[in-house]
Image (cartoon, rainbow, N blue to C red; front, side):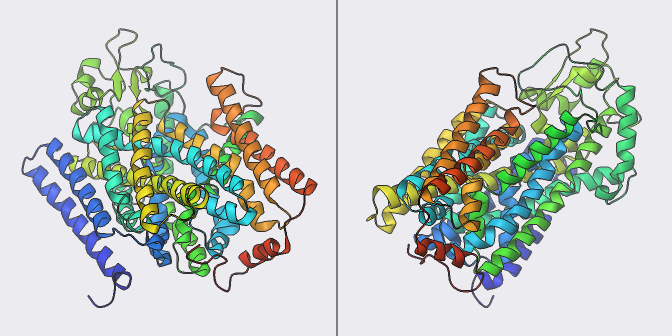
Length: 604
């Protein structure tokens, strides 16, 4: 090939995509030849992780701008793909459809909020942060407002939000590895962490970018193919995203038949749930609508505050490319989010419909327990069938599943070839790894660049800084795997907390830092501390201390408490203290002007 790596990206990823499709065909042939499902699962997970590791090793670097921002030369299209992979985490791929399956209409708030957040990213954040020329989000806070204490506050919020988020991703890798490799969940999280670190440790943002592009290709194929297959197999056509409305009507009939919402579980199993919420039952009361709207708002503002998302736009060649890249990101994310409700619908249809061979509700407990997929998932404690009323027939309130397995188990539930199960496992692993890579990098970069280099040792050599960053990657990753192995909350629960931490502490200091010249250091510090502490205290009150939620604001929405405190504290304190100097106000004006070079020099 002529030209450098960047000039040949189309050919390289075209060959990669073709090679991956050939690999899927090869696995299908092996399945027909009698190769065991377990072997196919090992090959899918091993092959894809091996490819990501190879990309990570080939992208190793000791150059500062390559390690922190991939040399600021990632084209908009590929940055959009990498951002989509960074964004579509284990929560999106593994847990979101499961949340819709179990929670019904209310969980659509996650989908609406996460998508809507990119409107805020495009209009308020990404182009202006790219124009600023920073390496990390705390780098912007520290430079815009001045002083190490403001930078330190941003580092603390970033670490708490990103660490909470990364535990959910490592949890997802453990879930996939446990089922695909038939190993205990506690071992699976460490297996997943090893794959994540190989991709990010040697090459930083440069390696993470090119592995995320490869991971996006795998995860989107893995997510869409089973849904199209199920839709066509059930007679609903090849475009399930447009035709699953009829399937929803059929599911509603079946939910009435099986008394979903009427029959409540009489037993509990740690981490497992029975289906009690209908698929399409939007709340009619003001409180239902309030809870939907507040969850959407927290997810939107959290999206626009999460450092691992914002730092992806630091890697484009220009401000214009950053703006275009946001558009590509939304398009690539749309492909998965538009499919998730259809996946949840067809999975539910497969389980509930007695006319389908896959329907299990209403069958004898003995017959259900003899199914291979039931035995496999039960063996790793992700599923339980319990004859609670002793009648020997499986009722809707006697099937308990972990919400995170709905997507992963769907091919087996729907009776699809096992090669599709292997494909989905590879997609789930890609989604969780891509986001975990970005999160670990955001934490390590903030600690090495903002805490170590900018505060502790400003004279540190480049080699020392990068070694510190890699050691921190190892330490933070190990801590994340340990916390994930404790199963403190569900994948979606941990992700919601991360968004709430981020929007409570960072949203208004970032937005006002770009759009309000009067915002000063004292106001930013008050906003970060006030929002983060009040939001965290409320989380403790409602989730750990057993407090009664105020106005329906539960632990998933504590950003509703933190954000107004942050906004009011920042405005009041800024107005009560001295305004920023003329140089700082001119810098804010320059950030909002698309043309011209970056505000900060590349070696800052």
